[in-house]
Amino acid sequence: MLEVLAPTLGAPDYLRVTQENLEPTLIVAKFIQDAAFRICGQWAQQDRQAAAGDRTLVREGDWDSLEAAHVRANLRALQLRFYARAVTPDDDAPIADLVELFENASSTAPAGRGAQDGWTAVCIAMMTDPEFILY
Amino acid sequence: MNRRDARGAAGGATRRDFLLRTGLAAGALTLGGGLLGRVARAAEVGDRYFIFCYFEGGWDSLLGLDPRDPAVFTEEVMRETGIQPGYDRLPAQFSRRPIDAGPFQLGPCAAELAPHADLFSVVRGINMATLTHEVGRRYFITGRPPAGLTARGNSVATLCAGQMEPDRPVPHLAHLVESYNLDQPAYAAAMPVAAVEHVQYILQENLGLPTNVPPNVRGALGAYWQKTHDCGSASAIDATTLAGIYRDNRARARAVVTSNLHRQFQFASPELAAVRAHYGLDGGLETAYGRAALAAQALKVGLSRVVSVTLANALDTHDNTWANDHSTRLADGFNALARLLADLQSTEAPGGGGSLLDKTTIVAFSEFQRTPRINERNGRDHHLGNCALVAGGGLRGGQVIGASSDSAMGPELIDLATGRSDEGGESLFPEHVLSTALASAGVDASSLRSAPIPALLRG
Image (cartoon, rainbow over all chains, first blue to last red; front, top):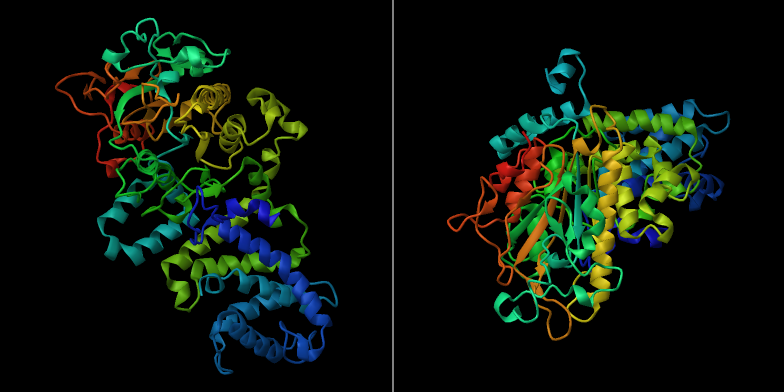
């Protein structure tokens, strides 16, 4: 499907289009959103089942924990993974919106799915953030 | 009271208001009066639509919008006239004579347009000042001569979209037509599509494939995106212009998905049988007819206000493919355009107040026309002259503006006030055509630095 849609997504054909369009256009934003929606749920599911040392989304502690310190520690780790930004333990500002997002998604999830829905939402939010696209 | 005043009086503030205010705060110092002027004008273009129809490769005006009678322009006088209609070389389905459309004549390939001659006007004798495809194409797309091959200025379609409220999920849709956004809002940039069939997929979440994101996650993300869109974040990247453009497009991408309009572009569905029948889509979607149907549908169902669409490809026929291929492709393009005109005329505008055609401005163009003489390879080469078709609300129909000479079809000088040939007049350039089309719809075309042609404007 993506190969079929490549010309619309901006891939050059080197006949009519010789330059790859690198602007963050509507079609790019739509594509990134589609990719995040498709990947993040699967990523959270697989990460939850992985051995502790092999995890890439929730690297710290108990995967299903909703405890605030655990969530904040993982969000700091994800800031480094997604944006190459080190957030010190005493600095909550860069992760405040994501903490709220995690809590919103996890608190409205069916029983037993709180952490999975929370991390799925965080993953989608971080993948569709300008900082991830433009960095 | 205009729409902007009315909204302010009601105490409502749109996302656009927010963007404009923050844009003013962030950019007014550097952009000065240009931005302020644009903001002040932005809401003045009301309930309007635009379709720009591109005929790619350089069209043969003798076969279309600027014909000559072969009984007058014979082979015997060709040395003097330099004009060779060549109608006798075309496939049998085409007339051997110009088509009488009433107010003017059309070439054999524009026969289906003839019954609609009162709906459109023809501009002849346009001086393109170039024989290069890219230059001519970008000249007509932007209304400004390119610098080398590089476009200068916004595409006119982008200019139109930028001066209207972004009240459609995809304000500007472009099918295989270049677009340029120099200084217009991000929403005015075209969403490019390379095939008609792609539209139905890109309007759906995950291209129509299933996802496993539950509703509570979507709800939480909606609140998060709204908050971060309005407030941004503290990071350096997030404060840049590119991030702002992306964030705005991210919001539009969600609006595209939630509009649920993709079904209106599944042309094979039973619901769109009437569209299929009107445009004749049985031959496939990637045809002139499919593209015309896409343009009409985008306006009718509320997807876009501005559509740029390529109605004919591969018209650059220097050899013996001219007689068969050029004529057939050109005729398909004009036939599709005729069906588009008829469709819009018979459709009530979404906001009421007349037909959709009354609220739509249509410009059909190519990068230049082909030589009036057939070359030794039985094709036609590039010619400096050009012609165009304009139609829609605010524009008079049944008019001919400008002229090409009866000697090698050179562009004649015209009196821009009357649109008639005048030896003491001026050359007619693409910017004259485009500024007239834009002025007819109330779009500020001052960046084109050209006055409109009064004879084409209604009222």
